[in-house]
Length: 317
Ligand code: UDP
Figure (cartoon, rainbow, N blue to C red):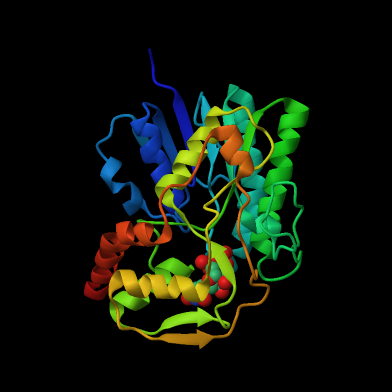
């Protein structure tokens, strides 16, 4: 019997590349697409001799056809505040045009489709923790809107293709996922703190550090995503770790795990920075039997070698 064929857009990104690994391990053949705007081919280097794997440098904001596929995992999108601010228009295009093209592939070949959406759909939430039924509090014209609205539009298009064309869609709302393969300079809080701690530089806490996030280790996230793919739920499902930390606590955890003597320096809080964020994962628990198992300290420990090597590599270049 031939292997099920999966297409992963954004396949060379942090999360996309971990997804490719997981799909290959489950016996799929995988085609990863990426225009390498923020994704890195080095994330897929270890798959170079894998016969069930293929990488194609494709910009999915233009029409594409990779032939029959059974699964479309639509993960293409700049994901860090620094990346989507630099590439604002590209972010809006991949969320809109790219999403149409990914859905057209799923429709054409009768494939299941799963999109990586985000807790950013909730904006600066007025409901806490966030349930999937919450509609969010998003500034539609602020600096984060290129990402927030792109992803909200992505969700709308995905639901429309489900309702009008019966495409077998899934929507995962992902909350602050971290782990090996995050780019050292993507500006997100964990790579920033790890890099700064390992170099002995000050950790830059924006604002007073009382804002909260709930961090999910990448292996937990991938497990949740695969469970969602195997379910039949078309409405959004939060896939995140519900343990909430202030950013100051996160900085202290990084200092403890790295054993660094770095100090904390406060910098200006970026505009519209959400004050709090924690997923209500009742739906994922009951529907998917999913529960994240890696706490922040263990996840940081598991990521330490990767960040240490990345810092050393950068130091050599
Ligand atoms: N943050 C910080 N220092 C940094 C990078 C980020 O204090 O060097 C804060 C940021 O202001 C936000 C939180 O950490 O409150 C998470 O930021 P990140 O960019 O990782 O993701 P977000 O959840 O905002 O999309």
